[in-house]
Image 1 (cartoon, rainbow, N blue to C red):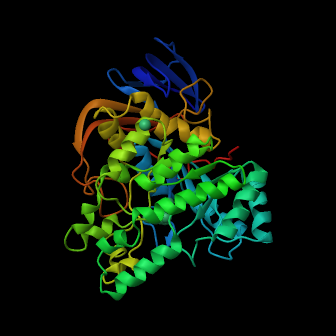
Image 2 (tube, rainbow, N blue to C red):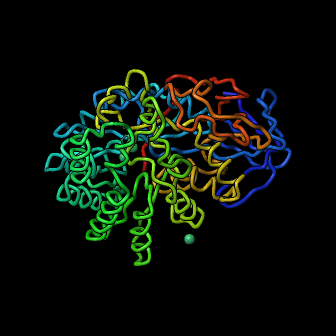
Image 3 (cartoon, protein in one colour):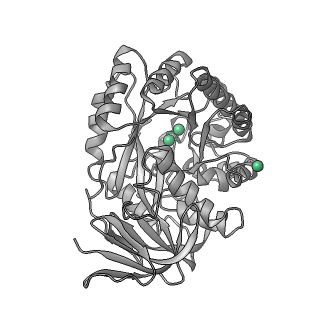
Length: 457
Ligand code: DUC
Ligand code: ZN
Ligand code: ZN
Ligand code: ZN
């Protein structure tokens, strides 16, 4: 394999910023310095006037997820390819067994699907029921597959959700393994009760999805997840936190010295619940759980992000097409498949509305999108860093470019973009994945199956 050199860019890490060349060979970063001498035949990318960032890590995606009677519309190849076009070079997806399904059987299914990924990937194991068998299988995937994080759903009661007793079992087993528990926090039974009341009143439009899952339903569950972790003396990671009530619970816990990791997503920072008032069932494109929040929550999230209370901005990428998937819930919002796309736009949105808007520094951008997820989920310094010996996963970002997000030009395999019409400052010009130029000036050169499975520690 011949190498590649990124010349003369502003190298940005979570800590600093300097002009340098980065020489990569054999899939690794081999040298960083000024005017590097490189072997003849080395591919050259001129990054003058541009930023060079560590490859983005998205620790929350759902490629080809069987869910709510259908399957999310990006598979591991198309989804990771869209990520590469947007500067994301690593994903951590979720194995989600059905209730009573063996974790091992589910693992084999997801591992097989993921072989087509064009960027490196890991898995969190969702634990959707609990007992002696599950405990043994948690130990087994931790040992055999380097799966060092588990996920519980406090929502979706009766399907993939767990009750408190099961959740305590998961936390205790994870504690014994030194693994991290992550939690989707919504009070499942409260949501179901609200759904029944709304549907009985004939309130079946997409807007009522949001009304069936108000912020306090999330806040209660976030507080409960934190409390259950505290009982076991364990840290906990809150996935896709969206609201003030949840932040209040996190602040309280951290003031008491408890380690609570927090993730949010661009849609919760940038959209408000007026999206559910769009005519012609267009609100369905924004049906995800938790839902998009009323105005006011977004500023609280930006503040929490800028002061370090939120560790990671992931996407919860989980697309469903409007015309044949979302439409399953045309007459009943509870049947609209929950989820939306986002992997392709995350870095550009966070640059535009974070850095260029003066809400985040460049270092914070790298920290929350690249470095923190690597550290939290056992991938650092192989990933999330620009250091000699790290994987050669990088992207080059031209801050002078301008564009507008649209489903008509994105690469995500879905017919809507929830950020349609958002103006973007800058653009990903080049993405290097495992030392290969996988995206350059609009040309996607990804290789199906080139992604490697990541054992984590
Ligand atoms: N929420 C979604 O919107 N989609 C996938 C799963 C989830 O928790
Ligand atoms: Zn979730
Ligand atoms: Zn603050
Ligand atoms: Zn999710």
